[in-house]
Amino acid sequence: MCIALAALFVAIAAGVALGEMIIPMETTVAAITNRLGLTSVALPRIQEAVIWDYRLSRSLVAAFCGAGLAISGAILQSLLRNPLAEPYVLGISAGASTGAVCVMLLGFGAGAFSLSFGAFAGSLAAFAFVALLSSGRQTADRTILAGVAASQLFNALTSYIVSTSANAEQARSVMFWLLGSFAGVRWPEVMLSASVVMLGLVVCIWHARALDAFTFGEDAARSLGIAVQRVRVVLLLVTALMTATMVSMVGAIGFVGLVIPHAARFIVGPGHSRLLPACALVGALFMVVADIVSRIIIAPQVLPIGVVTALVGVPFFSVILYRARRAA
Image 1 (tube, rainbow, N blue to C red):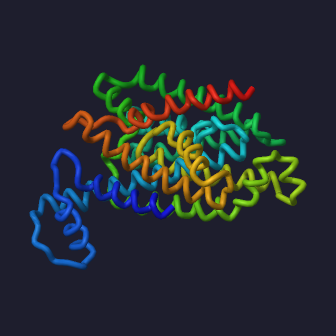
Image 2 (cartoon, rainbow, N blue to C red):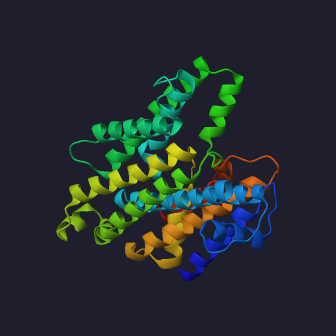
Image 3 (tube, helix red, strand yellow):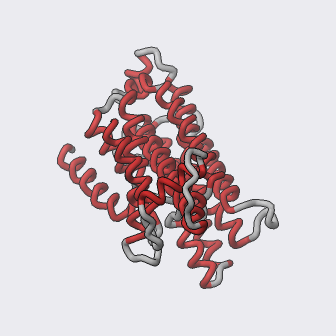
């Protein structure tokens, strides 16, 4: 854990220093300490602005986004007892895409709603749709099927709106957002993502014993005195909140919630009191490194972050499917 934390700090420092404008590491450190009031080193104003107002906030949002998606993936894989579950299995990403597209192309709210607000509202609408379909006796299979239905519905709505209302330039902008981007995040997004992820992590760790019990099935959890329905609803709500917040800020970024929980289990084991903090650290490290790669691999262009995560996630996804087939 200490190694992962140290690696995360190094990755964030590298994310601040690297980019189209290469900035020496000592300048990066001096700019941050200047803003914190610890030093007063004379620096070029443009470099200080790039470090503090753009790259540092971007790297921190990437870290919290990776942590939130990884925690959500670990929770869903335990609740649904499905190794292929990830945050977007509930259709939240598809709903966020529809909400964002409504604001971008249809002008919902007449300018009063931001893109993030529209995406967040769409995420909540998708979660409400899943909750309605899976109401009654909520089981893992029923929740997954409801999530699949929600994803198909909202993806179809998004495609219809783009195909009927967007010109070529708008369609390109929508596609770039749908693949994920940290380009527009600043310090308000850092504060929001940090608050949501920290709150979600605390709530999930508080239910670590219940999550361990869910690993053996709902009947086993119930026999251990776990309030199965209450815990399921609380954790699904927390997962939806974290995922909706991240998607509303940076777009849909796939495979992080699928890949990272498996990697963290391999490192620290299945116990959720250790697994959840490990997911947060490894997820944050993975996303910061992915953001650096997206900026430097074909510089000066920036790849959508979802492309980078998919290049890692698809092979990993294939390995999981192959192992599941061998075990069947």
